[in-house]
Image (cartoon, rainbow, N blue to C red):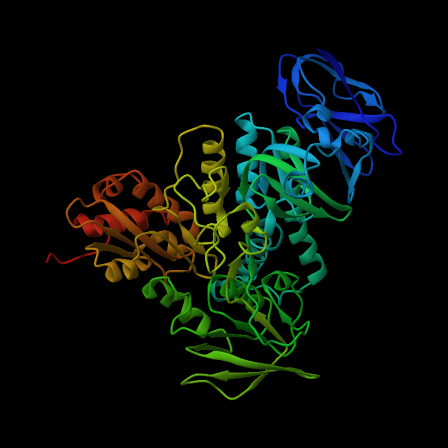
Length: 589
């Protein structure tokens, strides 16, 4: 039997553009197989087959204009939907009337009951759907597209790039550069070059920062377009294991996917019980720099809080930091933190360790903050309070349970080495998968997930994930830390090189840093490393590469490093361990 498949009644629309043809001659289609995608100024819709069979001819192409009754394709050997659902024979054919879903239209499968349609009904399809367009998400989408997959990228923000690019890594580093310029100029006054007091124009500073972000987000738009990655704006929630509902400004639509990569990221933690007051800000708010009369209290002495503290201190704000644990930057080796702590203790109003914020009272003249702890001060008044106590993954914000995805108690989604969740065709990457919450980790995981989804043999390796605090001085570490080694009982030996013996650090006027490397006592292979000092974040990659390639101390020490550079300190630490260092006298043991 030969039959024609035609465009059904699509409401008050005519001359609707065909934006995609989803079948070709020779394909075997089932009832409800999407045939073409149409798009109006208000909606997108997939038109499904109402007859099953083999496609003998496709009569439409991209760019064609269609209306009710336009021919889509011819099929051989199929039966109409009504034959498969006799109980519905007396009802009008389902293809005769569209169903609305916000700004989308979907022709429902006539043989489905209400429960089935609720779980599977959709307005468009995707071979691979990526939920979240941060560094992990856009990397996954672009890599998958490069490997030939048809990719749909869902993002709730207007711009691609996620938190990192829009209100995180990139804008904060722009401001940190501005802070460094101010500090470098001030320090040169002691060396014979004096500049006047900086004239701060916060409007222009914010505009410059926004321009940096705009260049990168604009670049991502171009890359998505070049790779033919479909971008949808809206918040996504799972309806079933193969359908995601995206709710945007113009309504909701449902996407049926073959595979999905969840890259939905994390949100800043807000301390419970805090009052709603615009003077209590998070890290995103803090990027909108302004003069802070009355001083800034940073709640949380981790990387994010300390980076923003450096910015505001350089801009002339009186800064205080309160941290619940006994150490700044918890998780980092204490010896790496000490040079930073010495510097900022001399600059900041106060640093309160082992201290908890127990209350904030909004007043007309500021925010009255109460503390608790063994050395807690009396309540103090601040102009603003920046809450930077970490981030929480969005695992519980996407209705993952509707897809059968397991979510841990803290909101992380467990994954295997291929980044697969317990639902094999759904992956999770980045902040939502596991700590550490780092953009470069997410990007690596995005490539792993995309390549595995495309049929390649790929697995993630989390041994070498560098961490960097872009404070002043910077702190960076990778691989095994001393703290971890001692906690795990892992044997190690250490080589250290102080920057006071490095010509480049002396010429920069910043000799407070050092570089250390941890080695296996038997094989002498590099296990980990840490650096504190100017540009530590740039230097740590050599250590990461050494660990990745299984280098030993001799491999690093015998590599000729350019002189004078800070990178020589990495070679110096290896030579200190080997006993071949000549830049310092190290007595033989």
